[in-house]
Length: 135
Image (cartoon, rainbow, N blue to C red; front, side, top):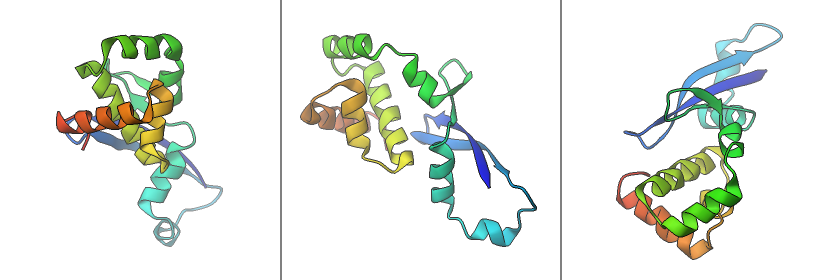
């Protein structure tokens, strides 16, 4: 079976929500087949492929393309200069939530994506949680 998933950031829930999940199989997919796969595992497997996320502008984009579209060196420089602004903390929340979906270390994803020292990332994650950008 192959999976395709579309995720949308829900600012009220502070997480990515599954908006579309497509299962492509050679034959029929039975209810018994679906019961064999846990939903969190299914979502993680589908999301690890090439998921779509809804941008702030309401457009569907591949999450990897959203990150790839950023000049990370410039973005990291802007973040270092700006500090933990509201916009930066929104990114912290989204990147952390993405790391949680993928089942990896979300703190480390924030560190590596934003180019922050581990202690700074930990403080910013706590602040993002405190002001409502992360649950």
